[in-house]
Length: 402
Length: 189
Image (cartoon, rainbow over all chains, first blue to last red; front, side, top):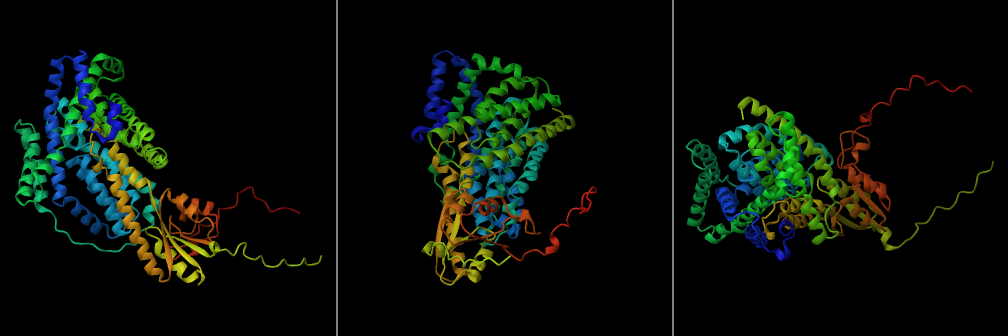
């Protein structure tokens, strides 16, 4: 089923294989229907949360938020590539944290490319910054990454507490990238920018910004009131959707499509399949590898295991496998898993060896880009980023308390 | 010892049309220096080719990032092809601006791939390749050549004209020679 998700024959959605696979593990008794239902019940709120964030990000794009980011980055960079890179870091880190890594990869990266082309700067450092930060800057909030949403549900942490514990690791991971990337791409950045300054002034999408800020405040307020913060995301998405529909700038169908129903079904089915694999041996096999406790060495080992597993399979199944094993040691261990599975995918082009191998074998024979540069950059940022972020997490756990 | 007769100046190895071709490597950030060099230094009858190469790893990295998002489906949301389109458009604009600055007839060549290898391949059979330094431009030295430039200079199959994209730094930017090792003694004859 993983192979199917990676290969995606004929462009069929992943759910086409995932749902029968989930049905199969239930039918063969690998998972009892009761356990599968419980797993689905546990995942359903997470998936609803995810859908709301996906819709919110798409509506932000429709309302011009990302175009405005491009204008803002162009203006602030004053035609200097190193300053543009700093703006890209700020923007990509914020977008990833608030609107999830999908928004950075799908919606922000093309804008960043256009901005650098418009300035006449070489696009490579800025595009690589986006792809890297989509992973390493996805530590901050539960909504930043689907892995976080899954862990958030498992950790029992409140939304503000999750953010408080992850703020320092998030900054540490971004700082590591910021130390490495400008040096790695020094030649491209020093080449300067000789562009055609054609900054078309675009007004800031105030309504969108206010809605997103209110949604963030809503996450905190909902947690304080003991309500699932997913409702805040839903409210934010509903406000933007209602406005866009009233002004006839989108359709209900487009909004429905941006919720990516097949993806949501896929996650649900993946959860059931992974549960079957974990209860039937993998859990026992991995259990000795998961260190208990939240001492610094244990946190480092947990994060390293997360990164290794994320690179072998993919970080989504990796987090589903590791969560039940790490959760008994407390929220600290769960967050260490996240550090590993979120930063780790930067090591391999396409995020995991499984994806890379299958895609190369079946889709893109001989036409893939050179992996050398990507891998060298990953080797420079990923191990360092994980160590620094775990140190920051350990410090946060001591100061704030797990 | 008598002076050996001076051999006659070698004629150009081949007066074929290819040898009158001057390739100007146009890259973001440094293209103006190259175009200006072609304008002032290329022979009047040279056939000038403005060459731009889009690095394939840029759309590749975006595609890889999307492919790493398991379960998203929707190949039409993959930013890789979108970036490739944007790259083609911006290469076209850059070459148009370069042609305008050159102000004489020329042809434009757009390639996509590993930049340094594409440039070397495009220079096969050319009479001259003009490129700009793309490394540290604050001082004279080997670091003023970036990786791609270094590869092209090392592997170019034709003469190379290497220009500073803007004013060259002064000769005082060369670090002083290292002190002589202490054990050094003048040779006794």
